[in-house]
Image 1: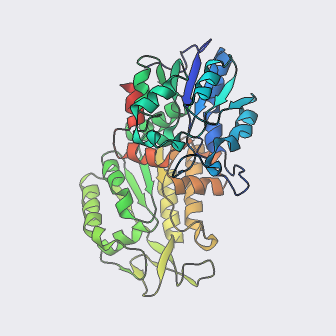
Image 2: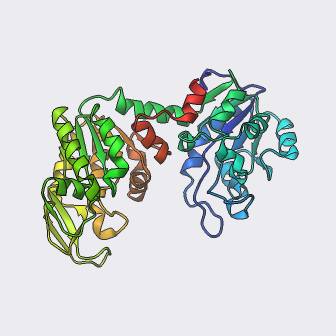
Image 3: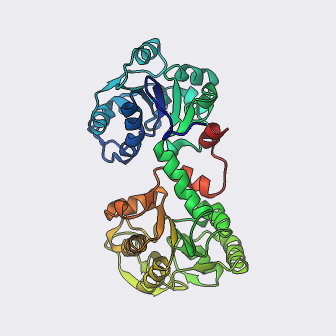
Length: 396
């Protein structure tokens, strides 16, 4: 494996797998270009060295072949603006025209290939499809962290066609370093903030973190499964009854490992799932019938904030409540502000997972934490301790 910092791309054509799966509105305009901006340092490194760049990505989930709605042509202008370089585009990724265009690419130029997922061979991890893609470059760079947990043709299989000339881009390097700072190199106290709707979706992460952290803060809908496991009354709150025994086991393991699990002492409950619902604050274990917990209360905010501010390493995955509804966003907002304050005071903070990222973006705090992960599913699987095919392919 090569290292991008040490590699000289002069007269080299770099085939870069990026994650430009960005949201588009009905007018085909980009509504959030975070993922494109994240790949710019890698692209510019190649260009500044005197090389050429061939970009490949997927966009959306096209069902059966080419579809204008999912064409990468809609993002060409934004890539050009951010790289300050004209971006050439071909309407296929493995056609004869596409391969001819990339072979004629001059140093300092960028070519964007059409959506990889217009071919079912991409998600199938097809070797012949990978071989065709590999013709576009002298060196392969994977900088698409959001896809490294998939054994797709352009993320895992293709690496075998670049036995020595393969490497991670700056984004993936930063993602790996950031997760390792939590899992293996974190300064104590280490606090994991785990939120979201269901215990079932975060079970493996919590169990893996029990071996590595000092505190686990629980928020969101999953808190009520824990509250019921403790014998509490949870009203109409979201509870996974099948996972109550699991919640009890987690609490027991935490106790055995001297890990402090913080559950919300109070809850903002509502009589309806809407912004106009009636609200009351009550004990998380005493939620009246007909009411549902939709956010953490003031006491929980204060307890969580104190723990976060006393931490040296912080992982945040999942909101504290239904932050999309203004009436129930305060818990998530205050936790985000506590993470920001801790970061300002020298803590390392990693925010990952779709809803957490959406929250820090909503409150305009993304640039005030140490790292915001671009790959929700990939980061979760990494935290679970799984081997990620796209990473293994480069390291192997």
